[in-house]
Length: 444
Ligand code: SF4
Image (cartoon, protein in one colour):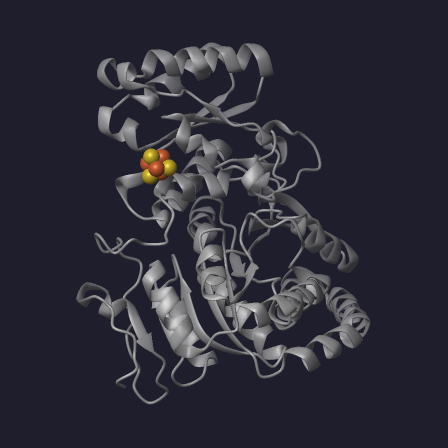
């Protein structure tokens, strides 16, 4: 007990040591503790994460130029068509606009965009300063829609107005607005694929699996998403949700609005990929579809077995720390590490839900540190306390690991390599091996 990391009083309920006997209730889904220097991203960032991969939409950031820095080139979402989303557009608000209002500038930006690019849809993101000065973005959107007969949709995302999860909701509301609230009379035997942002082309990996077992994707939300496909989403029979943290809310709203049921899936890791394929095949197909899914799983497992065995032999006994955005990814990663003989000793998320933390509690060992909305101090201290050999996280966690001489694996939106599906499991094992067993650590 005496060697345990001290944390500030207000954060104590957000952190626990897993105990199989005593069910500790972890606080989550709350605003960050003031002054605790949370690793969480802002509301605007949450909205941008979800909407930005829509490839042919125009993403206009109403705010100072700094907010617009969070754009395509920091992220790995790929496109099979339009490249419009790779640009970043900002109204670049300055002191004068803060005093006199930025609506005029916003209207001029929309006029310029329509004239030069003729987009079918423009998303306008409200950032912190717009929340302060109170520009009426909705009226600008309404006027632009009437003037140009295209969709111009506001995304209410001032950074200070809540947590990153609020940004997810704002983005999901914007998607419902884009699709419209009408149910479809036409139904096709296909799915909508929600919550995959096509990092390094992962949507295409899943699309290919589904194609091989005979299941069509009606619409992808939002990785490699296209306006013309997205508005057909109400025709699908089923929604499958990869990242429920960001798009579980959309799945619920689509069930209420269009009568489309949904299931949570995960194509991160072998075990979850197998379960997801069988689940989708059983729900949407017939006996033949399930048989095709089983054949696919068998051949993929056989294909990757020698490599997985090799990496397991090099990684067995290592310890991992995980800090990622949502619960589904943390859960899949714990299972992936288990497959490689690695114990997860610390695990946390930015936006995990109580049900995610309960699963995490069940699948991790006694004494594993579980934490919600962590800060750099906690991550560093717990990594040291638990003797982690590797940290899995995103761009903000990378320097924390390297500073401590701990290996790091990027599992966030900035990465450029596939970590989904069976091939992704091999890529993951390879990357963990390369970094954990790198000779560089012997010089630190
Ligand atoms: S916190 Fe505010 S100023 Fe900073 S990126 Fe988010 S919206 Fe922009």
